[in-house]
Amino acid sequence: MKRRHFVGLSLLFVASCSTTVNQSNRTSSNLAVSEPETIEFAVTDVQGAEDLQQNYQTFRTVLGEVLEKRIELFPVDNYIEAAVALQSGQLKLALTGPSEYVIMRARTNAVPIIAITRPDYNSLILVRANSEIKSAAQLKGKTIAMWAIGATGGHLGAIKILLDAGLNPQSDFKISMLGKKGLQALKKDQVDALAIGVNRYKDLLKIDGLSTKDFRIIATGQPLPNDLFVASSNLPNTLAEEIRDRLVENQDQLIEAILVGKDNDKYQGAKLVPANDSDYNMIREVYKAIGQGNVF
Figure 1 (spheres, rainbow, N blue to C red):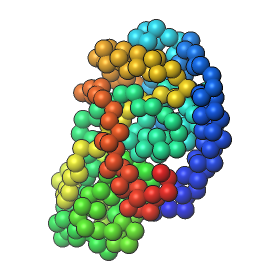
Figure 2: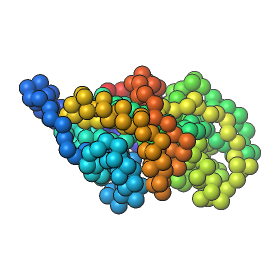
Figure 3: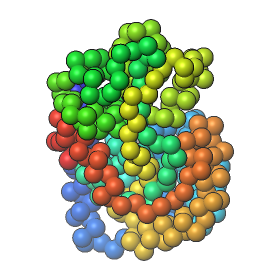
Figure 4: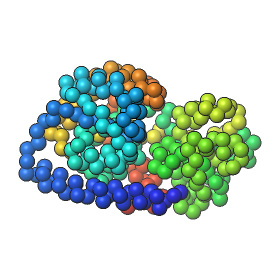
């Protein structure tokens, strides 16, 4: 499961945030927070300025009109960089996924603003059509391909399915993080099963020229927690509330703008809904089950 890499990333995150958390707490307790004229906006799963521009330029324009603020796109390489920037106040607003949110929330003062739904946001576990495996419980002692460490649909959601089937993720099966190569690996009998999000499964079928007839779904997870917009704790509370209200009031216009991005089909049919922290307890449960409770 490449746990050492994941732990190292988490420790780097803690070290990066510790100074800014203390500084932010001291600053916020002594100084009045002024309302910024510019809102820096990041998306934690989009790497680099070029991709961010291609996928969110239209959204940036519409968001600026809705908030009546200047919006600047703020490229980041990962959620750690976004979290540190949020904590320091360099970044004001970010769109992030469920697994990233629970760590950012635990290690920074990031404020959940509003959640955005993703239709068909579930984890699946697949086997080959001719496999004798009929259920998730029968994957004990098997090798399962997954997407990437910390991926909500292609890792954490799948672990939840296996936990519910009575399996121990630290001892009962082997995980191979294969990303886009996972479906082909299953087809070629290199792994016993594949855990993947619904939309990524559909995408890979098209990319790899494969058919659903080649595979059989043995388990489908419950709907996964929503993506969400989070704000820096450096924003005045009144502004955070105003941003929330304006996003909700203009959600049709904003979601239409997100869908202009070439890689944003996952938000087709999306809605903006309240961001309840308790909705993300499933993610916390899984992190603890895989031995990563220290990230909280």
